[in-house]
Length: 221
Image 1 (tube, rainbow, N blue to C red):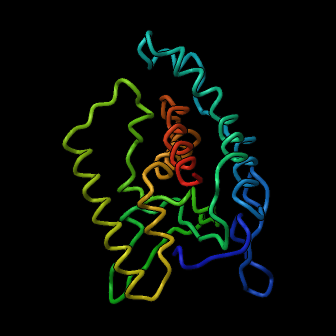
Image 2 (cartoon, rainbow, N blue to C red; image 1 turned 30 degrees about the vertical axis):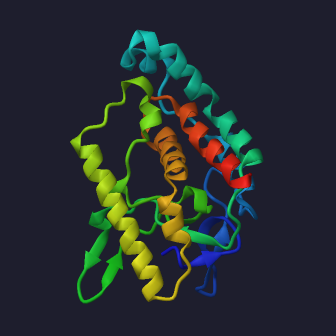
């Protein structure tokens, strides 16, 4: 899917002649010419689904104030990120936002279904299929403890990246997807953004930024 690319970021729109183009994203706007524009607009529309009262009920008392501050300031931190990060340029990939194993049908060929929420997104928002997504350890902060399931997922992700790289080579494609999936800092941020808006995961969202910005600083130096 990532080999299908467009010059702008946005939603997939079917034209009257049956062709497809990039249009606005529902509730966000666009289409956008750059990843920075997309992230700024996304930040303006991010809404955490739970109230402060609910967060307090579900969070240990000694952590709740820091967690609430992190949740509250996360959209503004994304705006800062949009102005600071060295984004990858387009063309941008088509991304299936709800890709589970259950949406992949294997017959004589491989078919992917449930495309209604497909979008063209920045490379920094492209992540693993949902079955391989992991809650970023930094999001859980001091309560994170790696277990056997985490280690299993990490190993499966490494194997998946290897398979993607082999597929890119065999098909004569560039390695944009395998590089994106192999960048753990960017993967953690992408998944944190989805968790914030879709799942309302309670956690230390601002912690996820540190490794991304630190990595970008190293890449620039």
